[in-house]
Image (cartoon, rainbow, N blue to C red; front, side):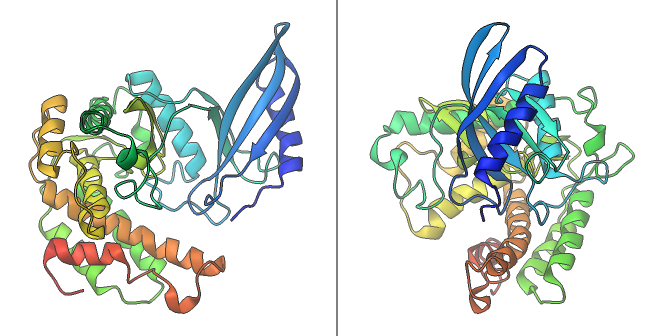
Length: 361
């Protein structure tokens, strides 16, 4: 779903870029491209900027993340920040200021739609590799063809260390009250369940989704009332990290972040691991930790006891299943899939929930 006019956007980006600093001039934007497959979450554009700063020629690569025209994929946590691009820029700024978690160097957030059509933020390009979703990184690509067992293990440990560092941020002293779903300084898991139940009802528009509704009921009934509230990344997985030498170089994709029990991130990480191996019938790669080993390592580096990762895997699958409703409808609306193949309700995540809860799909 490419929505960017490349030539016009390059000209407008040049003017915007020059406005960021009184010391910058003669800005030219080149090599602007929209990678294939973007647009259903935040659209991404890559570009190179040439400019003069304090009398010196500069040339660097940048990335811009643009708000989807039909709204963000994940439900907003608070009415105080409903634009996904603004949310990501704000939370990445906090993470960069209050932790050692690697974050790309950020430029400004821009709310004016006149620049490139929608709100966006820009950041410096970080070189590295990203595990693919299609084909699955567990089946093809550098992790299968190039990585050694030690490198695969180091990669997972580095990712879990980054997750633990995110969770170590004191959300109150970091000024993250604007992300508080409760609105009164007491965010809980119950608030997250309420957000996703309302989101599900809205997106279904009268359609039936018995497996997801069953999961939401189960989650409410088995709420562990974990009071270890912190900043949850929200989309914690290998494909949202840029890796250099099998270690974290940059943590990306913060549009699902929340103030919630932080074990939710571990559940999302483990859920994607399950879907990348078990769900596709792929044996674990040599050196790739088991889910139990991942949980133990996270516990060791975070100092947080892993109390109930099964609950948080179910919660992760329920969240992902809810997101699939909007994703499926967007794929149909964009003409990517015919209506009869809409995966909004019946999909691999629905199957995953049924298996985790041992219920019929």
